[in-house]
Length: 119
Length: 119
DNA sequence: GAGTTAGTTAAGCGAGTACTTGACTATTGA
DNA sequence: TCAATAGTCAAGTACTCGCTTAACTAACTC
Image 1 (cartoon, chains in turn yellow, blue, brown, orange):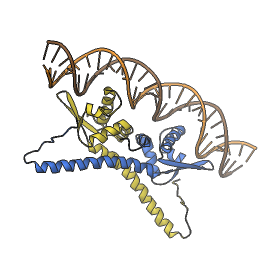
Image 2 (tube, rainbow over the protein chains, first blue to last red; image 1 turned 60 degrees about the horizontal axis):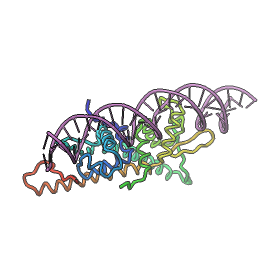
Image 3 (tube, rainbow over the protein chains, first blue to last red; image 1 turned 60 degrees about the vertical axis):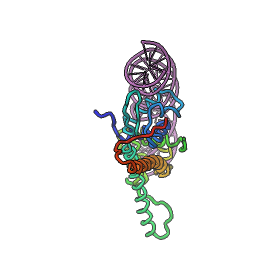
Image 4 (spheres, chains in turn yellow, orange, cyan, red; image 1 turned 45 degrees about the vertical axis):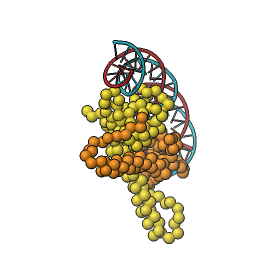
């Protein structure tokens, strides 16, 4: 049982929190310890730890402990997975728009978004 | 630091649910009525309505009612906002990797990921 | 070896989610 | 006009989230 999960559910859920987005925005500029991550945040250390745990569980962040300090890095693959899903949807939508445009161009006098509707 | 407004919270939160992702994946291929959206799903209609409401609140979906049927469309801007945030992070990370690569190339004999650490 | 620093664990709490069922309102078509 | 269709509203429930405080452990520092 690996600690990360990588499911899109969890990745998006992780990104749905401003604090956690700030944490990844910080880690994207380089590794940081837990207290470095906590410093700009207005909450208790245990709260930060919990956010960190969410980020680790979904695979966005990895960390290891050396001595008494735990150093955290981002793990860009999880980010790419989320990006990939969104891009797939957006491009599907754009392709459809193109097809619709082509179709309308062939139909003189039509301006409205006349839709099909799959039933 | 919170450069992007709070609606990113809502968009990511909306995408953090498989059912809702299926709904946007369906709408990306063209408009659909509420019951069309509900048909492949294994839950009650009111539940689907609640998901739809989440999608509308965060701006991912728009809908209007004609007669007794409500037709839903995706609204790609919200999708692009989420994509934009992720892309910004990923590219920041890649830029940093490049700089690190350049730096290491100038330091003969270094192979390890020797980090700074913003203490 | 005493105190400080860095992190961890556990319990608890209020708010929010993801559903459900049941009752109800329009619209449409025979 | 009446029944079926399409959607809506309200309330209830079980579960999860984001946070807190308090108590604790494991390095380092002096």
